[in-house]
Amino acid sequence: MKYAGSLIIALALSGCALPDFDGKPTVAVRATDLAVVETPVWLLNFGDAGLRRMLLEADVNNLDVASARARARVADLALAQAGASGGVQISGAGGYLASATGALRPDGQSGPRSKRSDFSANMTVRYEPDLTGRLAAALSSATLEREANGLDYIAARRTIAMAVVNGWVALAEARNQSARADTRISMTQKTIPALRARAQNGETTGTELATRLQDLTDARIARAEASGQIALAEARLRALGVKKMPAAIPLRKIKRPRIPAKTDLSRVGGRPDVCAAWLRFHAADAARAETLANTRPRIVVTSSLASTARTLAGLFSGNVAALSNSVSIEGNLLDDGTARRQVDQARIGVATAEISWLQALSAAEIATLEASINLQSAEERLEARLAAYRLLASELERSQARRRGGLDSGLEVAGAEFALMSAQLEIDAARATAFRAAAQWYDVFGTETECRLP
Image 1 (cartoon, one colour):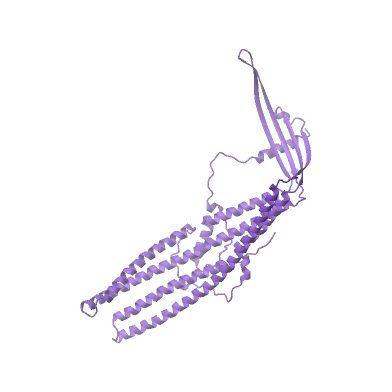
Image 2: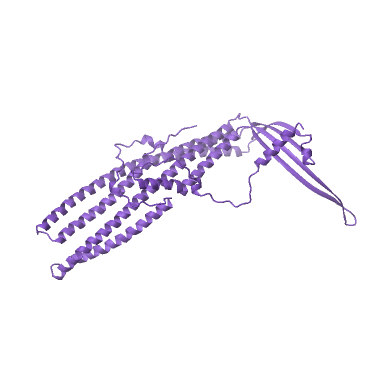
C-alpha cells in the first residue's frame, strides 16, 4: 500500500486532464458576452451627451472590439501556458484493457473462452533546469506578445470610436443639408409667382424664371440626396454597434479643441499602434533567443511511477509499482542544417519586425503632421466662410432697407436671401470638416501609451 496514494493522485490527474466533451454543438460567443465595463479610450466627445452615449454603445457592441478583446484573452492564456512550462510538470494517466480469447477445436466449434482485464495507472514528473535560457526567452516572448495584443485591443477601440465620431458628424451634416434644402425649396416657391407675373407682363424674358425653376428642381434633388445620406449614416452607425440615434446634433453650439501651437512628434512613439509594433520587435528578438536555445542540448529530469493489476481492487492492494528516474539530454547533437535554417528564419523575423516598427513610427509622424495641418486649414476655412456670411448678411440688411424705401423689389431681396443661403451651406460643410479634422487630430495625437518592457 505504500504506492497507493501516488496511484490515486495519478488517476485523479489523468481524470482532470481530460477535456470536457459534452457532445453538444459549439455555440458562437456573442459580442455582448465578451463586453466588460472598461475605462473609455476615446475622451473627445465634444461635450455632447448623445455622442458620449453612442461611443459607449459601440465600445460594448462592436464586433471588431469584441474580436480584439478575444485576441487579448488568447494572449493572456498563452502567457500563462509559457509560465507553466518553466516549472515542474506533472502528468498522470490511467487505462483499462479488457480482452476475451477462445480456442477453435478441430470440429469447428469454439472451445472455452478466457477473459482478461488489466488496469494501469502512471504518474510522471518532469523538470527542465533552464540552463540555456530557453524557457526564460519563451516567457519573455509571450509576455511581450501579450502586451502588444493589449495595445491592439486599445487601438481597435480607438478605431471604432473614430468611426463613430465621423458617423456622428456625417449624420449631423446630412440633417443640416436636408433642412437647408427644405428652406431653399420654400424660398424658391415664394419667388416663382412674382417672376412668372413679370414674365407675363413682358418685364423679363423668362430666363430668370427658368433659372428659379431649375433651382427648385436642384433643391428637391438635394433634399432627396440628403435623405439618403441620413439613412446611410444611421446604417453605418448601427453597423458599428450604436443602438439609438440622437434626436438632434447641434454642431453650431458645440466647441472644438484648441489648435496646438506646435506639433510635438516626441509623443508619437507612445501611440498604441507604434508601441505594439515596438513590443513585437522585442518579442521577435526573444523568440529568436528561444529558437537558438532550442538548438542546444539541455538537461531534463524525469521521474515516473507506474502500476498494473488484473483488477481495480488489486491496483491499490499493495501491488508492486515501478518507480523510475532518469536524467536525459535533449536537443540536436548533430545538425543537418535544419537548426541553422530555423535560427536564420528567426533572425529574419526580428529584422522584419524592426522594419515594421520603423514603418509604423514613420507613418505615425506623417499622420500627426497631416492632422495638425488639416486642423489648422479647416479652422481657417471655417473662419473665412463665417466672414463671408457676415458680409452677405449685411448686404441682405441693406437690400431689405432699400425695399422698405421703395428702391428695390422683393426679387432683389430674395436674391440676397439666396446668396445668404448658399453661404450658410458652405459654413455647414466647413464646420463638419473642422469637426472631422479635430477628431483626426485627437486620434493621432490625443492619447499616449507608455511603452515598457517587463
